Length: 304
Ligand code: ZN
Image (cartoon, rainbow, N blue to C red):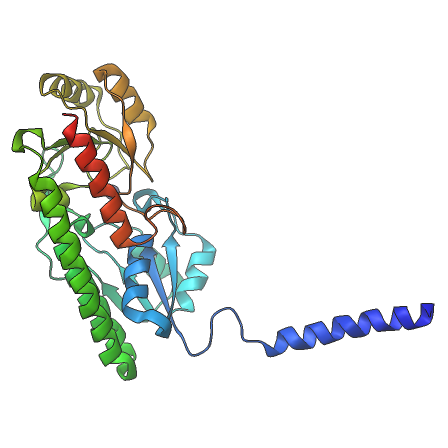
């Protein structure tokens, strides 16, 4: 009996190994590996590519792409991909270095290609700078998904018509999202449409829907605002009686907490600016993120 047990155990283990060797690896060989720079693009590529693609994101949910630093594992990931999708507009300034250091020779699709960029005056003497946060306007995202469909179709001509059909179905969802947002905002008096966020990520949303966004930090989270800028903003919050103050999911919220304290306002719930929430969270897809943000913004502006 004892002898039987000692033999039976290794045999059972061997059977287990044989079974796992026969099952397919995590990324099925028939799927196209696509690497994206950040989580929002990950969702969009999944929407367009559905089961024909296996998507990996360099910057994950709730993480900040502005200050991301690629590691050796990311370069390895890049070499195993067949398409790299980035936002462009200077958002991922680390991409070029990563592509070069990894020796990646494959295609790079720039999702924002063809949108009308919103430019802002950078620091004095530096000239104008493009605002990278174009995904905050759903009409831009219709361009994003069409760019993604074109890049995937080029890579996988057999899937081309499927990518196009997936894209056009999604564009209809974007149009519904946009119409719903406009209805919600129409209920807010124009003079109450003012919002404070920690960094300047909602300019496209503000331009598209007629909301004035003010932020102590600029279009990137890299630089801290000056004490003078913060003091100026506090004065403006008090003068214009702005109560709609929000923190962002991927940003350092200390700055905003201090600002809220000094201005005497309570920050509202998190807005999803440059990253989705983790799976199962309130903003784990682009459409959910936009609906979540709009609901919070509308509730906040009503308090102004
Ligand atoms: Zn940002």
